[in-house]
Image (cartoon, rainbow, N blue to C red; front, top):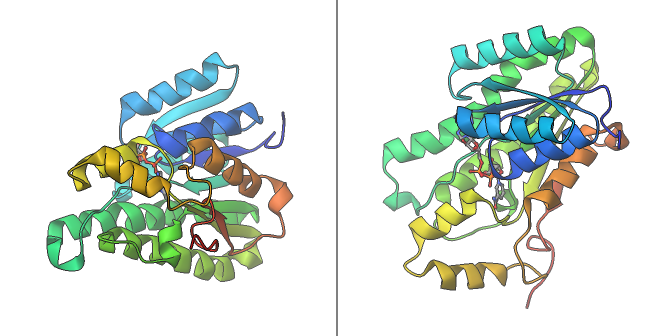
Length: 258
Ligand SMILES: NC(=O)c1ccc[n+]([C@@H]2O[C@H](COP(=O)([O-])OP(=O)(O)OC[C@H]3O[C@@H](n4cnc5c(N)ncnc54)[C@H](O)[C@@H]3O)[C@@H](O)[C@H]2O)c1
């Protein structure tokens, strides 16, 4: 299992859900994984699980919305690993409500984590990639960038922005041999979705049953489904993919579930 052998990969928000599962998969494929999260206990748990399985990983704390914190993360990662071959901007939070229901602070929080939290790691890590004339960036968008879903205004705005940003970044950095692609998952069963169901619906079980029906499979995705797509993007197998969206959504965007 060596599809990522020799690569140092930084994953933001790798203490839970998709980020954690991806960190574990990447390590099992030979990557040295830099696990970032704002929750140190959860990040350390991810590292412990990787080390226990014989892989290589280290936790570095950072709040991806804070420039000093992200600069420190970058400096520590370069010091410990010598380079960052792949940056996976995965950290993100949910936002519930139609526009008229969302308070400005809640709006700003979602924009901050989901957009600024991609901008800042790119801002500080891309110069190292440019210097080495090599790099690979994976940005976490969502299939909500391509479709309307009820009461998800702030969240959808961020994920649409990430898809647009991915395309612009690809044009800017292609001359430096840096690839930039986006992941567009459908609904994946993680703590993020469990919280969303609990906080948004009077009957979370009923909501869960109805959300499952959105997929042509009749089931939600699993973190591993997204991690395997991320593995393809992180590896050199995807070397001809540039500025592209990769959908992992059980047919939600393009399938017709009449
Ligand atoms: N679960 C889904 O259905 C789904 C679908 C499409 C896209 N996504 C996206 O995938 C990504 C991961 O989602 P998940 O479902 O695994 O969520 P999750 O809540 O399980 O994990 C997100 C992690 O990000 C961390 N984080 C939050 N704010 C941070 C910050 N400021 N700095 C550093 N880390 C921070 C959290 O502590 C958490 O460990 C998010 O960007 C989400 O929008 C999820």
